[in-house]
Length: 69
Image (cartoon, rainbow, N blue to C red):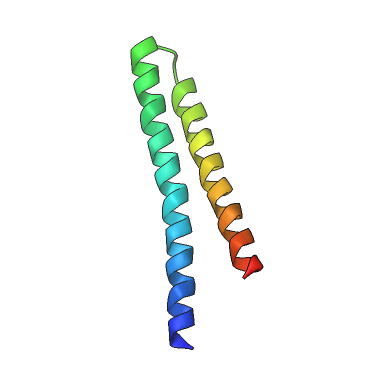
């Protein structure tokens, strides 16, 4: 039973890191876009939103895979 609990914690940690990494990478790219084309905070906002959306996509994909098994 302990092995299954460890696996669940690892999956949850991985999903959380994927969302955080996606948001961070999107914000970094958005920051670069803002500095390159002087377009204000829009690059960071859009990049962060796209990163979060990508993380949520991975979350849903993992949840569907887990429920299928």
